[in-house]
Amino acid sequence: MPIIEVTALHKAYGRTKAADGVSLAVEEGEIFGVLGPNGAGKTTTVECVEGLRVPDAGTVRVAGFDPVADHAEVARVLGAQLQESELQPKLTVREALELYAAFYPAPADWRPLAERLGLTRHLNSRFGKLSGGQKQRLSIALALIGNPKVVVLDELTTGLDPRARRDTWELIEDVRRGGVTVLLVTHFMEEAERLCDRIAVIDKGRVVALDTPSGLIGRAPGSTVVSFIPSAPLDADQLRGLPGVSSVDQSGGRWTVHGGDDTVNAVLTLLARLHITAHQLRVTEATLDDAFLDLTENTPHGKAR
Ligand code: ATP
Image (cartoon, rainbow, N blue to C red; front, side):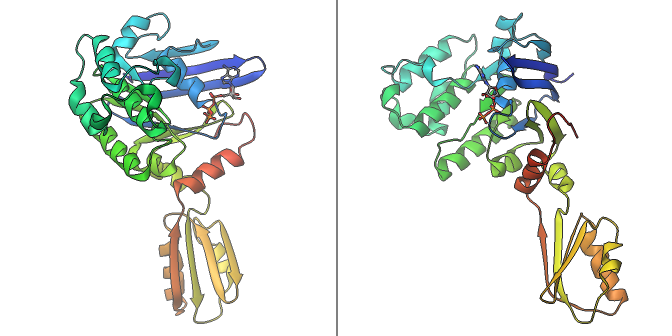
């Protein structure tokens, strides 16, 4: 049974359909990413999972419980990042950690958590005086303090410097190794590619793709690009006829072939058969960025792939 199951979720604000039939299932122990452009409906979806928003239609289950009707049960298994408005500016980091630990029957020891998140030096600092990055780290610590089975992290590393971001990724990998399922909303493709087992791409309130990072990249048309200067004249139609090839261009003697996983092999085999050498051969692969842009820019509203 999936630990998080969202089925045909609808949530509108006036005429804005923030979630327009979102369905996804997260397996226990996964790091599951939610990607999408600004305003796509990501926060709305995860806040329905957290029980912070009430769906208009559809069902949400966390460990089999309804986050609205069974709020207490869900609160026991789910940890969420804090909203900035939830903490008093005068509370110190230590007080916040102790306070949140007291909410849970079997909390984590907050000291190693604070150490891991680089908060030990700031234990006596007041929340209102923390930098954006320090607040972010504290909110991650508070999400983990109840030893949750599922943790929801929305824009986990926004505002963190590159080192803190990398440390946080390692922390998330540690958290998962400890058996916690992670639902992660992010705008950072590198973060999604590095951390996530699977990703749901949401656009205009709908899931437009759900796959592993490499599966998503592989879907980008022309995900592999082979370019070379042939040692002898070449017929473009022969290249176009190769399996998986989506386009062929020629400019200044250099040929560029866009295709999929098998394109490099197919092109080199063809050239060998024609006794043509590929000079200055270059192969580049699409990134999650390319896949994201393709999935979210060209998808007509309301059309799921
Ligand atoms: P971002 O990446 O910018 O955080 P998001 O994908 O998380 O965006 P949501 O915050 O879920 O998107 O918003 C989806 C749509 O619903 C947007 O058009 C947003 O303006 C609208 N919306 C969200 N919350 C509310 C609200 N409380 N009242 C009115 N409209 C809202």
